[in-house]
Image (cartoon, rainbow, N blue to C red; front, top):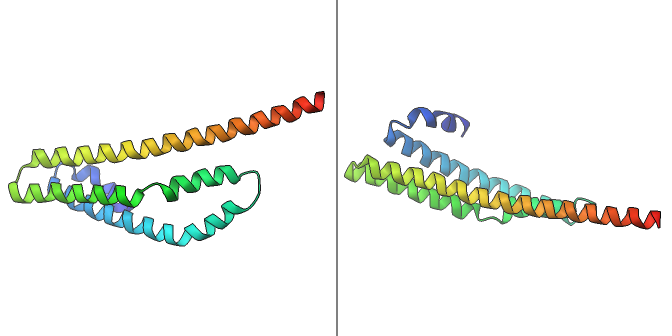
Length: 143
C-alpha cells in the first residue's frame, strides 16, 4: 500500500494509471481493514470491558475505529473510482473522470474529518468530566 500511495502524486498526470492505482489502493485498504477488524475486535472489546480509569476513552476509540462505517465508505469510494475509469475508457472524457476522482477524494476526507471531530469532542467531554470530578474531590478535601 505504501508504494502505491507514494506513487500516486507522480501518476496524477496519467489519469488511467492513477485510476487503476487508486482502485488497487482502495481494494488493499478494504482488505486490510477487514483483517484488522476481524483480528482485533474481540480482543479490544475485552480490554474495553475491564474496569479502569481509561474505560471511557477506550470505548470512544473503539467506536471510532470499529463502529464507523469504514467498509461502506471505502466501497463507495471504490465504486466511484471504477465509474471514473469506465468513463475514461468508454468516453475518453478525462475532465469528468478528474472531477469524479477529485470529488470522491474530497468527500471521503470530509467524512473522516466528521468522524474525527466527533471522536475529539467525545474525548474532550470525558476529559472535562474527569476534571470536574477531580475538582469536586479537591473541594471536599478542603471543606
